Length: 398
Image (cartoon, rainbow, N blue to C red):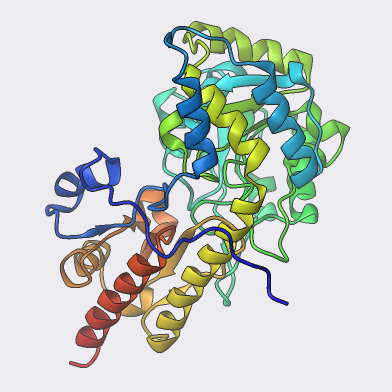
């Protein structure tokens, strides 16, 4: 007997008049508001009621002032990570942060000096390389290898050839944005072995860790071994999982006391404070009540992915979709369309009426690719597929 579906993702609340970033920046980014914005990585799917209800209840109290993150919020996350990802942190390991990017910049400040080298594996989320350059550090690019079937892998041989005594930090994207890989244990172990050999700290961005499709399983870098825990900084949170980016709350988990002390030395310079009292209760509610909602969301998201995959198969000589294991970000290989990057972007904006993230923004290795955020309602996904199908059919029936 098929399980009853409790949550409905067929439609979602309109965000056009809500000051949502993806809508308000359309004119600036795409030169028109006549595009469906599917670029920035938040969902056009309603934030779950159990989160919003917790916030409403908190507002029964008439004072919204400075608050400390309650232990119960991090304890809820610790329990979630133990059950879902087989890793156990202690309360004293947990540090509040308003975003993973802020945490990354703090790690760069804490564990490196000007002129030190930081490993970045492109194509990757743009703040990975922007942050390195903005701190006056040296970008050590270790591009991912792209197989004929569209799957990406670490290039360990290339990495070994580039590491030297000035290499101090590796920025790991796990699961990977934008290529959708969920790294396997043996792949992560190769990274760990190299970093241990060369005394390199690993900053592991695991913000997409809950958005993984079966049979793939997210493996936290710190879960590999005691040695892995001793050289790693783990960043995660509810922002992507439950569409809660607007609550600006995530966590940093560091078990090694020396690493934690160095991180906090930089962290305290920037005055993070403890975030919003509303964020605290939302964070806790998500981790305590979100399991069933998340499982149904992932089924919905994968159906959206399959719609894109089916469309791409119709135009397989021109556009392909990278096999996805995690995230809600489709990495579209458009090199078969024979367009230069600007013309490719223009095609999606002017012909398909879609505002996507240009592949080139993820590094030179993203040339010829586009990133499409498919975390939308069924109704919206069907319209997007229809519009893109029409644009492609016109383009290739000439």
